[in-house]
Structure formats: C-alpha cells, structure tokens
Amino acid sequence: MRLDRFLSGQTAYSRKELTAMIRSGAVTVGGEVIRKPDTQIYPEQTTVTLRGRQIAYAAHHYYLLHKPAGVITASRDPKQKTVLDLLKPQDRLQGLFPSGRLDIDTEGLLLITDDGALSHQMLSPKHHVAKYYLVRLAEPFQPAYTDMFRAGMMLREGDSEEACQPAECRAVSEHLAVLELHEGKYHQVKRMFAAAGNHVENLLRVGIGTLRLPPDLASGSYLNIFNKDVYSALKNSDISEVCAFCAEYYSSYWIKEWK
Ligand code: URA
Image (cartoon, rainbow, N blue to C red; front, side):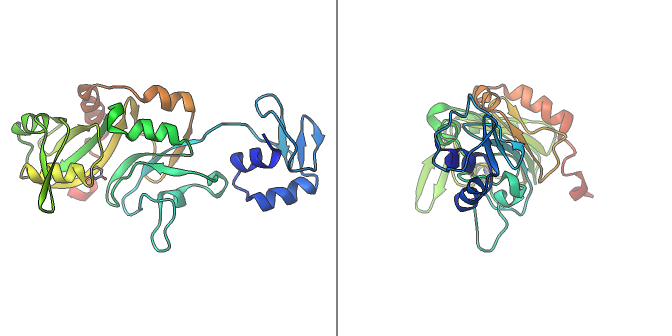
C-alpha cells in the first residue's frame, strides 16, 4: 500500500496535507524518515510515525455512537448538524458514513464506519440481523400487539400497502415496549404502532444483534470499537434478554420529560 494512502486511511488529514508532511520529513517508516508519498509499505508489518506519533493500522474503523435527538443521520448537510459532526476532528476519517438511518428525533445506537461490507450485512433484510428499539407509547401497551406484529403488519404507503416481516414485541412496563425488527422501512416503528392504534412518543435503539447501547455512554458520545466485536455481534439475540436489559438500564431514560 502507498504510504500516503495508508496515512489518509488512518488520520483525518487530507491527501494534500499528508503529501506536504511526508515531503517535509514528518513521517518515518520502520524508524527511517521517508519523503516519497508513493513509497510502498506493508502496514501490518511495519511501524509508521507521523510527527513522532505512531499510527496504528486498521483496515476499517467503527464508532458506536449514542445518537441524541435533534441530529440527522447523514454524512454532511449544509444546514443541520449531522451524526458525523459529533466526531472529534481527529476521528473524522475519510470514507466514514452512518450505517443505517435513525430519524432526527430517534436516539440510541448508531454505528459509524467505513466498512461497506459490514454495513450491508447489518442492514440487508436477507441477513436477518435484529435491531431492537425501546419505545415509549402514548397509550398503554396492548397484549394484542404481539400477535399483530408477529403476523406481519400491513403499512399504508400512499395508495398501496406494504407488508412488514414478522416482528417480535414485548412490554417492559405499561407504556414501554421493546420491538425487534429485521428490516428498516421508512419510519417503521412509528408506523407499526400507529397502524396498531397507538403513538410512539420516544424511540431509542438499544441493540443491533448482540451489540447493546452501553448504559454508561452519554447521549452524543461514542466509542471506538473493534472489527471483531462488531462482526461477532451480527447474530441473533433474544428479545427477553433485551427487555431485561432495558428494564435494568433504560426504564427511566425519558423520566425527565414525564415530569
Ligand atoms: N423506526 C422509526 O420509526 N424510526 C427510526 O428512527 C427507526 C425505526
């Protein structure tokens, strides 16, 4: 791999800035100053430093963000704040994008990555990776929702109707429920509960596969996580376990708004 390409994948500097830094002698490879940007290197076998700081190599990057409300799920936007704006400048690497979409008012677990294959695997309905949402309902949860959602809801889309895949839903308390989805239609959670005669007041994504929204991760903050942890999370989980997790850590998440 070319030295300038390696550095542009691991740092937030532009190619132009990196070329200038390499030419100025700010970069070493295996302890030697290298001034040619097109020098071939083997990133897994050699140590690269930039201005004295070692640059670790990762083929892809993964940030687990606790998305706050009021921020849009996009890479950039001329007017509104995006989830990528929440990253520290040094973490805004080229090629990062949010994997999947949460509505502006939806909060919770969102992965930001530059790994297109992972994102496809996570989002494609074919791979059945479960997404778990904690929902605060305007009206009390009805036991009938379980069978309605399990049978596959029909959602109106203009003049036509679209069928949802069977979904699991469980109550956590009178107004809180967990919904498990394996697909991501537009406003799906809100539309499913609206079709069932209720209204979603708040929505928090608490899990993807076995990955959970860490209870100690403040809204708007994020963690750098590893490839192996993300890939190993892409498997089925158990909604009962997610309900217990929500009951323990998130049952009073919106409590300030109820007062
Ligand atoms: N379903 C919704 O209605 N909104 C989201 O943000 C995610 C799923």
